[in-house]
Amino acid sequence: MNKIFVDQIKERDQLKTVFLVRDKNLAMAKNGKPYLTLKLMDRTGEIEGRIWDNADYIAGLFDKDDFVVVQGKASLYLGKMQLIIQSLEKMDEEGVDLAAFLPVSRFSTDELQAKLKEKVASIQQSHFRQLMELFLADAEFLSMYSAAPAAKSMHHVFLGGLLEHSLSVADLAEDICKRYPELNRDLLLLGALLHDVGKVVELSYQRSFGYTDEGKLLGHIILGVEILDTKIRQIKQFPPRDAMLIKHLLLSHHGQYDYGSPKRPKTLEAVALNFIDDLDSKMNGVQSHIDKSSASDSPWTPYHRLYDRYFYRGINKTEPNSDKPGVNEAKKLDRTKKKDEPFGASFRERLHGESLDLFSAKPKEETSHDD
Image (tube, rainbow, N blue to C red):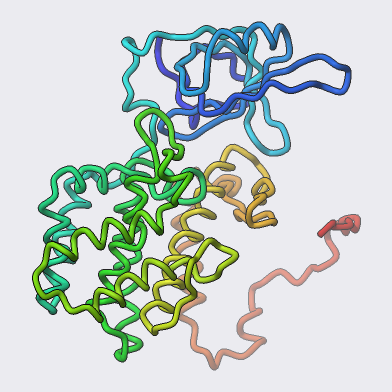
């Protein structure tokens, strides 16, 4: 059986393929009949599945994080692709290629680790560089740091997401230090690379993405400070003040108490880290939401519950006749010609040769627009 990936599914497709069950919920319809809602995933994304017949019986055949063979029909509902499932059976994991079911970073592990080593080598202050070298020398830690997602559902939700996000924040840190030279570049760079380090313990990602017991009870901020403190204690005469400042970066990077931050940012580096971490997280989260709605013809995404809004995707449809030879080239030449016209060209000269028959077409009916 050939694997059909989520991003290949189109409306009205009849399909039979394997998915990983990310979530499973048995509920009751208004008519009193049970139905089953599933979140099915592979490495390209996830799709909602609905089972309307024999839902209570089928629910007992499999569990969350199982692999299942699904047969059903795809349809668009409120702008999102959905599977109406006609049959489902559990599949033995031995016949499954795990790499097909968990999303991964577009960068290889070697690429990400090479960039990490470049960042560490650029640190000027020796005790800060020595601290990061201890993390690099810890093979077990480096393996987890390179494999973990950055979150369960919000942003960089893929294997390698934690390291990709951390490096992206580090890039932003270096950019912002050029604008604000009063920032301690080495300190901010360490904060960027280590602010989410506790997620190597907080998150589970062997089969699907979730939280460990430590993650639920302690959270990545506390876990991260513990990991950091263990490494700092391995360095003789590490400056206590710098140890305090690095820990403050981890403790305050969520910015506000309402967002789970034990401390609010109280140094310039902490303020900067809070903003650039939030920027990278939101940019990735919104872009991922836009990408997931690519199957829709609407220029707007489905509603995003966390951000409490819709996002404008723009219109990506090709223009009529744009695939005909010479059409795009002619348009490019026309645009170039107009661009090269002198700014001093008169309004009359610009309109010369243009059609001014404004009333040749019947006016369109006015339409109302909802916000």
